[in-house]
Each structure stands twice: as C-alpha cells, then as structure tokens.
Amino acid sequence: MSGELKQAPFRADHVGSLLRSEGIKNARIQFEKGEINADQLREIENEEITRIVEKQKEAGLEAVTDGEFRRSWWHFDFLEQLDGVEGYETDTGIKFEGVETKARAIKVTGKLDFSDHPMIDHFKFLKSVAGNHTAKMTIPSPSMLHFRTTFEDGTYDDQESFFTDLARTYKKAIQAFYDAGCRYLQLDDTSWAYFCSEDQPEEVLGKGVDPEEIKSWYAKTINDAIADKPSDMKITMHICRGNFRSTWIASGGYEAVAETIFQKLNVDGLFLEYDTDRAGGFEPLRYVTRSDLQIVLGLITSKFGELENAEDVKKRIEEASKYVNLDQLNLSPQCGFASTEEGNILTEDEQWDKLRHVVKIANDVWTNQ
Image (cartoon, one colour):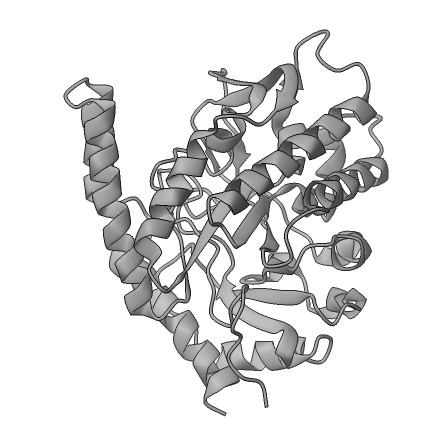
C-alpha cells in the first residue's frame, strides 16, 4: 500500500504555468500602452498571483506556483536576465505543429554569470502567499540556453568553457533561490524530446553535430549545477515535447534518452509527458534503477479541457508500476497550461477541473486504498 508523499514531488503535482487571467492580460496591455507604470503592474500581478495560489490550494495541491504570471515565455524571461545573455526580436518564431510563436530569440553576448535576477524577488512573493503549502519555482534547464541561443563572436571559443560557466551560473542561481527560501525547484527542458525523435536532432543542433556528445554535455552541466544543492532542497526536471496553443513540436518515446535521464541525471524527480502516444510506452522506465528517483507521470493533458476517464488513468499508472515501484510514481498534467502567455486552448474553469482531477485520481491510487 502506497501512501501520501510528504515531500516534493507530490503524489498529485503540476508542472507550474497557468492560464493568464483577464486581470493579467488587461494589465499587460495597459502597461504596454503606458496607461500604468511598472509598480502598478506589479501590484496587479501580486493580486492575481495571490488569487491563483488560493485556487491551487482549493484544488487540493500541495505545491503552489505563481503560474508564471510575470512571464511572457517559460524560458526566455529567465535566460535573458542572466549576465551575458540578451533577448532580441527575430524574423520568425519557434515552429510548432501548424502554428508559430511570436518572434523572439536570445543570444550570448558576454561571459555568463548570475547576479541581481528579478525572479528571486518573484519567488519571495510566492513564498509569502504560499502559507503552509510548498512554494514551487520553475526555471528553464541550463540545457535550454545552449539549445536556443546563438553566440556573438568572441564570447566562447570552445564548448568546455561555455558549459563550465553555464554550470557555475546555475549553481549560483540555485543557491540564490535556496537563500530566498526555495525548497522545491523545477528545471524545465524540451531538449531531451528532440533527441527522442529521428528527424529532429540534426535539424535543431545542426549538421555534423553529434547528438550523443551534446547529451553528455547537457547531463554533465545539469549535474555540475546541482552538485552542491542543500540536502533539504528538491530539484526536479520536466521533460516536454512542446506546448504552445495546445500544439506540439517533437514526437518519439524515451528510449533514446532513457539511460541518460534515468541513470545519469542526479535530479530528485522527473516529470514525464505521457498524455498521448507521441511519448511512446512505459518500457523505457525499466532504466530507472535509483530507489530515490521519483517519476511523475504526465497522464492528464493540459492541451484540452475534456477530462480523461479516471479508470483509464489508473490502469496506466498500474501499467507503469510494472517498471517502477508504485511508491516512486506520482501524477500530474503533462505540461503547464500556458508555457507562453498566450496559453492553451481551454478555459480557466477547465484548467481547475483538470487539477482537481489529478488530485482525485492520486488520492484514489495512493491515499484511499
């Protein structure tokens, strides 16, 4: 019999981003038009974040996030504020299945470092309203900087120096979040999904680039970044195949990265997308050999509002338990509800129904036995 998990990740968990409320959307428009200033925008953000934190508590979740309400993107907003990184407008956006994001990109313009990052204060506010619940912070994995950036001439002449600085930068970030009170940090990463696809690695990484070499660099950098994390801090990773306006980018099961992510990453837990057959079966979970690694099954989709059949979800959890002990399994949506400010194609009410659905199923599987 498996009971409630008292530490992160939780039996019923969620990836983090939430549909932007009308209050946030309207405030952004007013700010862009110059009708309100930055302080007024922040006050509205604070009010809306406080409200949605309470909604998460009411849904029965233990971990609460700020819904990424202060961000436009799940990754660029964080990465642009690292020393040595700049955001800029491009001619094209990121291409998803049948749709494209607004034009935005990042570039490395100098040596990487972490100092005076605004998201430290963002987390402090979240923690102040989390109460007895766990305040969860989400940031892009260090892999995403390499995966999505270009380099200005003269910044980094070799990969080793870049990845060394990247790991050191993230190590500082992790310590800064810890010092601000963060005990549950999630690294979001879409790069691993590309390695799962036969036609994606060369397309994204470039011709002549060895995917196995890049995988090794990514794993080493992540491990170096989290090597000194305090023992009472949990760091998880969310692996996603793309999530924009209810569409996706990559397809393919976890087999191509299974040994790396399950045996070579020293994270405390992995959030895995499993809401469609694009993610393949549970067989790659056979590579999970660590008894302390928590696997969060993303069996509930955040892309559409229709609720999954609860009994079908329970059967899939049972199927996964053939490869990983039930005590190491957890449940969540496969991704957030708004990886960018545009959000997925469902209503706020449907979003909260989804999260309550996660909690109810998790209670049935792990608590009410």
